[in-house]
Length: 149
Image: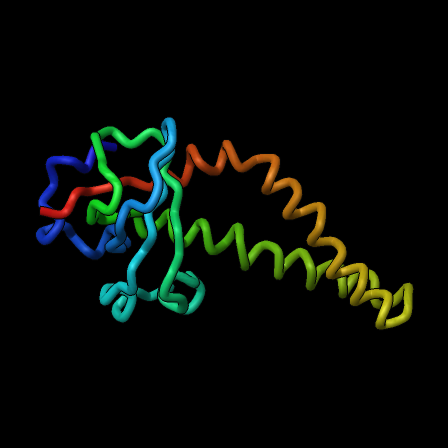
C-alpha cells in the first residue's frame, strides 16, 4: 500500500493509527523512527494495550520504505487499526489464554506452585515461535511512513 500521496491531515482517523516521529537511523533497507507522544492516542480505543502512549520514547523499524528519507526528518508512522488489534491479540491476548489454559489443565495434577511455574514457562516456547516467525509478521503488519509537510 502506498501512502505517499495522501494528505496526512485529511486521513480518515477511523481506519488508521498515526504516530508522529523523527527518523533516528537509516541503514541499508531499514529506517528507524523514534516516536513522539501522540495526541491521537487519547481517542484510540486500544491505547491501554498498545504501550506507545505510555512511554515518551519508542522506536519502530520500517523495512524498505518507498521514499527517500533523511536523518532527523519529521514523519508519520501509520498502521491500519485492524492490524493494531491483531498485534495486540498475538502479543497479549493469546499468550494469556494459553497460560490460563495451561494453569487450569495442570492444577489438578500437580501442586499449585508447580502449575503456576508450568503456565509461565509455557510462554517461553510461544515467544520463541513468534521470534522465529517474525519475518512472516513483518509482512502481515506492514508499517508505512508518511512525510510531514
